Length: 403
Image (cartoon, rainbow, N blue to C red; front, top):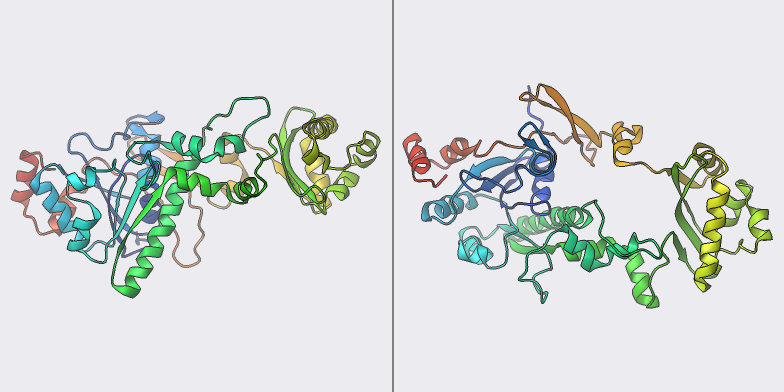
């Protein structure tokens, strides 16, 4: 079988990373053909190898976040382990780590050390709070990113407590921003011959994810309208919201300011809203009571027919509307499946195909290649042999628990 030549073929990455935000950037690069060498603790491996749902001995968390990478076990507390790591860095393009502050310096894989070995190295460091934060010395997870950034309010329901959500939006947004930042720094290194240190954080990434909604809150100095996204201005309001149909099935719509009244006419809601003094969507900016009345009336009206009907009416009027899927429904939605956003991979030890994430990209000439996550230390011999170590030396490393 011919190996797929991905868009990042030829790129070499060494990563001392775990969790989600620390591994997904390199998993995405492996999908696109990069050689990614993941450093793991001998005999133990990544702490997340058995996290998530277990199918046999395969954990959904590790498999999702580490597919396509190579596993090299190294005792980085040892001189020989550090020496091997430094040898890998000599011809690497990228190094990634997400250890707590201070650990990299202690184990001699900080930026200052590695940049002396390879001045072109792009050094990516992921943290919870950010390098200059007062709490920057503390560890953190996706929940920290969601909680501190304001994301919790964005998905809040009036009258309910703020809470973080099940989707790892801080982890994943951090991973994607780290992915882009690495490529930007790599391009710069090719032009200038000099690498640099790139730092990203869960808090900073989740804060960026709020986009213009955060800008609006800062400019207006007031919280956003929650329960539905009623945006724009008092004079030109728009709406994005979800409603249940006659069977309790949810659907979503988004109407720009110029679409509001036209949509209400297409739905035959215009006269009813006018009679109730609710046709002016801008009232939501003036009064929480009026906002609630408008949303409640819309909910009542939408509960009289099926979502397929409402979606059809809105789409015929060239308005935006679609079904609201559960996660399992999304995984079977033709819009997801036909774009290869979900795919299947053969697991011989389970004797079956398993559904996994596909790829969010569609390259016309260099398609992504979805692979498996590695077994612990699966590539020890391959990688160490490539560095010039003999079979006896590799066996010695095993005996001394270096690998």
